Image 1 (cartoon, rainbow over the protein chains, first blue to last red):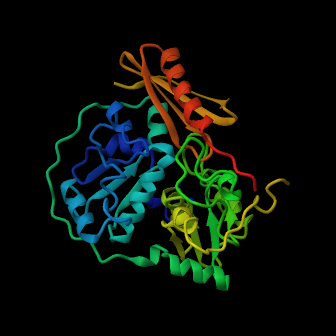
Image 2 (cartoon, each protein chain N blue to C red; image 1 turned 120 degrees about the vertical axis):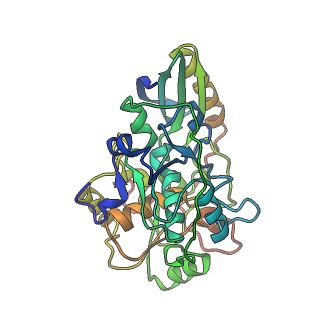
Length: 287
Length: 73
């Protein structure tokens, strides 16, 4: 992991096995499938539910500063706690949680490389017990919105061609053949992609065991689609969690400075009246 | 306690690639079916045997994947 621009944001499963119960470490599992934690988890880890604890449940938004502070406090996370996040699907929602933690200025937040899949596959110890947590005082920073793209910013970038848009969904979602990942409910009115976007599915960043590919491999994957860090990058997917994963790889593993996550993503763009939409396969998809 | 007999295999269900993962925790076999791209879990099941857990997961996967609409582009 030492070749990455910021290797300190990743820890190995071995590191977690040795430090999960250290006093100043809090390990949190965040799964797409919120029932996964209950079947067995990293000893000492707590769980956050992405759909109730990592978003505003009334309006569509991430946590407010106050909601984030409450979550951290209730989770026994102080401002100096080493926060280690992991989950299923190669850390989709762990990356989403890390993105929010960075927005609110948590200084030491890391991802367990390989996530839940690697922990189980390695036959590491698991527990059925939820640890008792002593709340801690927590003060979040004001939101750093340089990490997040809102719709007007994306519209402006599309019109002026000032950013590289990275659509991290599957090729079938990108083309418009399907409106949601196979087997999941359709949540938008139109299929396709934002005009000018490149299709670099999030999974290209991962090895078979769920870990991130090497710095050189990642650099080549993105550069092959013209994403090399020389201009701002906007990552998006369907609801913003897969793009958090790609955002993490681009910003912290490759070290590109200006990378934002457009969490409105296709469920916002694909429902807009009059928004420009492109359909069809990505350049070179059939090559 | 550990996940034991961990196994992954890829197969096609209703025309979609599926990754089927199963393992045993204690006396219970757990299985989940993911759509390979993007990798989202579409069925999570348990059973007394691997076969039972996998068959349940595949049955649910067939239901959900069979309802996925393909649009002409």
